Amino acid sequence: MGPSEFIIERSNFKMAFTFFFRDLHTIELTVKHLLPSISGRNRVRIWDAGCAMGPEPYTLAIVLAENMGRFAFRNITIDATDIDESDTFGKIVTEGVYPEDELKRIPADIFEKYFRPADKPGYCAIDETVRSRMQFRKHDLLTLESVGEDYSLIVCKNVLLHFHPDQRIEVIKMFHNSLAPGGYFMSEQTQKLPDELSHLFTKVADDAQLYKKI
Ligand SMILES: C[S@@+](CC[C@H](N)C(=O)[O-])C[C@H]1O[C@@H](n2cnc3c(N)ncnc32)[C@H](O)[C@@H]1O
Image (cartoon, rainbow, N blue to C red):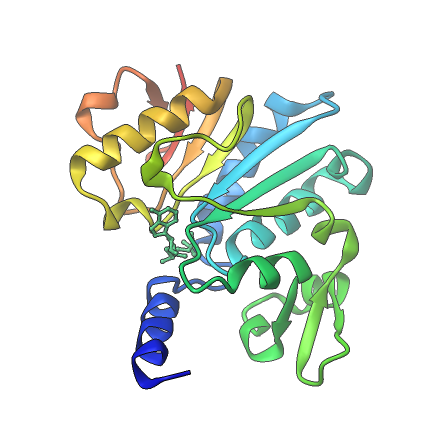
């Protein structure tokens, strides 16, 4: 690898800043609202758009598994997508293997339950029940093409801020079309829904950017 390639790779990782159990408040609140709406369903689709190396969708999956029980959790599928310009996230998300240093924020009891030492020293692998629910796909949100339909929840955090306001509106419209009736859209604390789209969603909570499709 030449020096310029190294700089490009490093800048992609900087843009892909993420960590396990980030903004747990919003994730827990979302799960609390989501669960009654998917109760009894045998197929529940979730899309995490801009998932980086996977800590965000895996955190969501663990919180869901904890709250649903293992049997019902098997009905969940999470489409984890990212533009993945460094072409490295797919392997990481698919394998679910992370350096121990990146797992230190995870509460001890959850860590014990969902991780085991990996073959590689200093790394841990996520439990197969969680890993098997995750499927990674390379995808550019700015194509405005959805990766699926009938989603009960779409998560897009710390991604839209990189886009031009007009692009942001078009991407959120595409999310709206991809959600099932009454589906949820979760964004980061600082990302308010553009006024132009207020007729499409109801805000679910005062202290989180969590919206329900109208
Ligand atoms: C700061 S990270 C956010 C990761 C995670 N969502 C979180 O909040 O912890 C931003 C991610 O957006 C991805 N991204 C940037 N532009 C994108 C695009 N046009 N389509 C899909 N993903 C994109 C980057 O590759 C990066 O992984």
